[in-house]
Length: 323
Image (cartoon, rainbow, N blue to C red; front, side):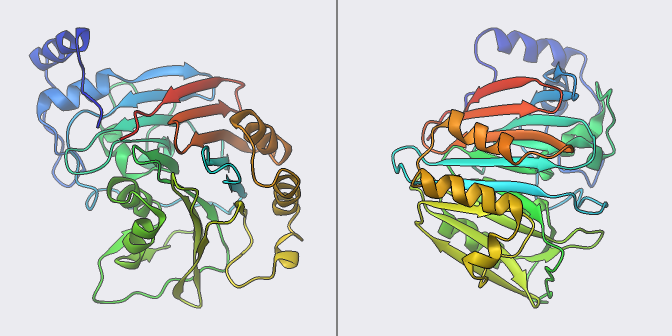
């Protein structure tokens, strides 16, 4: 797990505690004390003109309450893939293709879960392009649009028009983006992540319906979809796995490749035997990017490196300390 605010950062924590913000409103995700909330908001900084921000969440949150937000626009698409041909260096990569909203790279280290790094579209918190001091950011852990945790488990979503989830009255219901926070906090492997999905109903209200790509540090991967109301999973240790905006579970590969983005990813990864480095993965994302691609990110599931580029032309690298 990450060490919180070591060295000079301790002085920052003391300073912000002295001018502490009021406690978070009842019903929000934050379980921070006043000093932790203030330290979180004080860590916010803008790093490019997307605009893209970075923030480190200090303290605890409850991932089961707060904002169950889902995008409320027609799906524009996304492209994701796992390149696991090199078992020593499996990669998870994705383009997030959506509306021109501000984004946030968020680090969390919950006391009762795995540390993770994720990317959040903060417009779904109601936060605009000038978020400084906005306490709605304290709910940012609830809305990871993609991410990787310290055990090398990564997850990302894409719109799937045909998905439909039937509710089981014996299970708790969570939002279709929120489920990714539960996975990042609680799962170290693909099997554990699938089990998190299986324990919950998903709420696609407000649309669009979604499907999900998962991968872990062993190179295992899976797609989770909802077909005729039921969760279905395609998993295994394939050299590569891809996901765009067409169903894949139970769909013949030739039909999948009729989607031009899926087809280009599949052809490139076939040629490479599923073995590409981070630069190669980023180049493949560039091949399938769209005019509305907001960010492209490559997660190194064993090495912990995160490479992020944005529509504004910014490029950032982060390091996830791996457990």
